[in-house]
Length: 149
Length: 132
Image 1 (cartoon, rainbow over the protein chains, first blue to last red):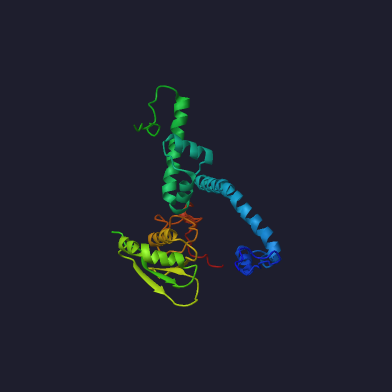
Image 2: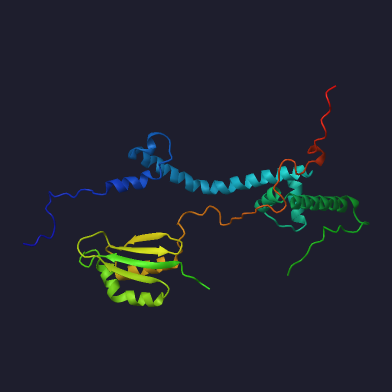
């Protein structure tokens, strides 16, 4: 006779429980305490760890930008400029380098960074002359703006 | 010129197992077309008789990595898609790349150290004064 469905009292049992448990535990192996061994505790910890890692991706951008700013501030203070003066004068001289690149230059290319600081300082002086002198002196050299069309 | 990183594809399946039906259909219909479309990949078809391990598609790459993909209970089209995916991959491990760039010489002008921007009088160590 043909049986199309199993009898009601027959129940199937899990055979790959070990691998299902290992899938979760492999992400908990570097945790501290019993949550790296016991499945029940590990499930909660692994879920929280994943949630935290997704949320932290937004924080990472803020954190790295603050780190770059700290480094650029330290490097420009070595050359006698404060960070807001440095950044604003660089932008006014149409040097559009972002903070990541400036931080890398400050670490790996100190002479280039020194020349950038000197450029910002010169542009700052020309800005002061233009604001305070008013009129008779000619415009500064580094204050000229190049128009790209 | 493009060099395909996939060296050989081994199709290991059993001719009688029920879950290797897709593999058998692939061998009958699509394997020749696939081999003609990818002339630089060697396709080995090795049926092992009797009940054995699950049907598997093993890909070997030029840098030595071997990647095995289960094809149990897959249709012929799905196996074709899988095979093209493996053929377009390189053998590098599939891990998250931390940085998309790498240099062996990061510094051209010399890396910054605390004494780069200080007057060089600090690095000079003259003769020690004699104790008198």
